[in-house]
Amino acid sequence: MYFPLLRARQFELLALRELAIEGSIRNFVTPIFEPVKESVSSLNLANNIFVECELNGYLILNPRVGEMSGDDDYYANYYINLIKTRLKPAFYYRNNGGYILNCINNFRLADCLIICQNDVDPTQMDFQNLSENPHVKAFNVEDPGRNRSLSRYLKGLGKDVIRLDDPFEKEDRNSDFLPKREHMFSEENIYYSEEGFAGFSDYAVLPSTFSDGGSTPRAVVIHLTYLKGRQIWIRHFTSNSNFSIANVQGKFAEAADKAISFCVANRMTNSAIDELSRYFHDHHYPGLGMVKKISIKNHLLVVTQFLSSAL
Figure 1 (cartoon, rainbow, N blue to C red):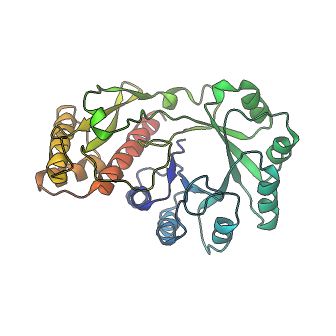
Figure 2: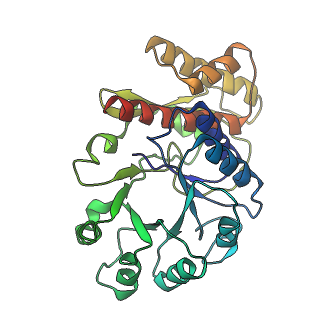
């Protein structure tokens, strides 16, 4: 099972809503949403589609970033007032076991996921009291190979442990992707199960660091993952005319031309690639948010393609 950790912003949520309606990722993908906005209108839309299409997910109730970050009750109150939902509660752990247990008890939460870094000391009582609570069912652990004691302790509890990795290689500027060649993105999809993990997790084709908005880029990049054998590889299709911020539409056409040519040559197709192809052939620039949405959709479909074929 794949557990992408995504910020609950407009285009991330739009990607998941469209995939939920397609029915293409159910049973293979369980997204983890980190809300970053005080407004929950987009979350409500996604939740309703998830209910309608029977797609499960998690909602982080104490986000690390965004407008309502921190150990607060804002999203817990939102969560318990949902009339119907297929989202389960999740928390970031950072020596805040007391806060999480209070939330679990006060809001009567169950089936909770705990997300933690690999520097957690499993012998600390704060962490043990939380981990052994019966309403905590799963853990998402960053790069767990660096703390085997933590992994062994959690697996010894008989609870699900999901490994969290950060494979996206961020560049300072979009134009820096231009000389980069294709490279392997992840192979956790191959080995997670035999290594004793219940699933694998990453930030999809996005960096783990949070950036809320930004200026007009000098270059447009379309990040597309694909299967190369059993591994997941990535290419960064980058515009060439990157000397100024002018003509973003033209830059998109340059990047899309490279991406579509590669996909056609390698017989790659799915709903995300088809959407990109339509924009390119219609000479239509959909905006950078839609480009990000297409990259996310493609990645989740590539992972699903692998997991479904491995059954």
